[in-house]
Image (cartoon, rainbow, N blue to C red; front, side, top):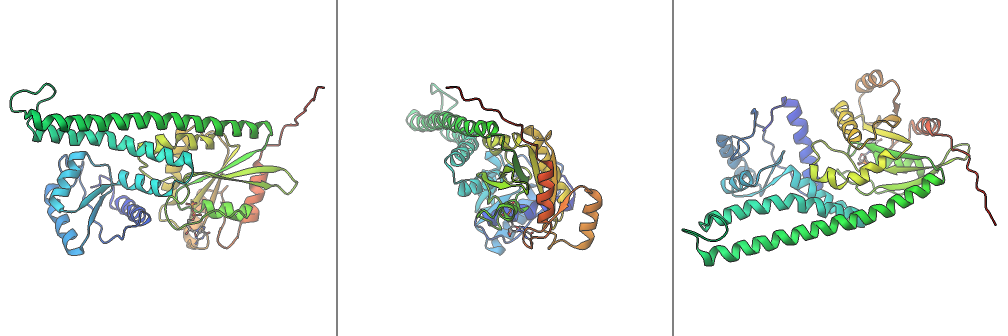
Length: 367
Ligand code: GDP
């Protein structure tokens, strides 16, 4: 369902399809319904569920993906009515993050986010369980089959406790890993090496630009979220100053809050940079919306007070008219094509110009 315009809904659905393909699905059909709010029981309208059922049947689909977060009961109802697996946007994004996280810290953060998503949903199953067994809570009572409800509840409680323990443990581990990262960062600050963070919407071309700028062999994928774990490379200015360039987590609209929370520490690293190179995909149907979404997240982690250099990428794939429009909109932006290499020298010069001059460090070594 959507309360926005048709175009908003279509863009969002196109993105959802790209996400689904990233996760390894083949997308068959899209279905949009305009409503003021989701149906509490079935998310889309009850009548629309029948349409969905026939689309699923005629397309031979085995999964329905909803562009929003479903409540446990909406998910159950939709599965019962469509007879196929139903996944929401949050679960899909968590799945992709899980597939792509490579570092130990990244993996721990994703697992934490998944468990936080799962925990309230376990309660949903628990409620069904006690309803089915006629129990009205602890201590048994009329209609409650003690022998049936007891073990069920115990199992649920054990599961929940186990998950809570695991969550607590992951939080501790992530905190410890974060300390290590902060120590490294402190060393960098002491050495006065300026840091440039490359931020931008997912698939904007951050990894490709990092490769162009430093010759680093970073994995480039035509898939959303290829970049989860930040990569840092060193580069040198024309006059011999060293600086670091880091590529950051890709941003996407409606990022599940569990993920924003889990990746907060990684994103906060952006706030420690001296300059943010904000990459926009000039060939995307709505670059302005992407810029807005990225700036919103940057603001959330306190990186909006940093100097920002806007870079419009993929000029080779964008049409002339759009580029002219974007040039008028963002006169300060640098226009590049990471593929063709055009504009890269200008970008390098613009970065160097904005880097802080390192403070002169005096070290006195006492005997
Ligand atoms: P990231 O998610 O922001 O790190 O984006 P990537 O660097 O992984 O690039 C995403 C996709 O866009 C890949 O398929 C790249 O090949 C493609 N891409 C990157 N830069 C350009 C460019 O300048 N022109 C075109 N046409 N495609 C590009």
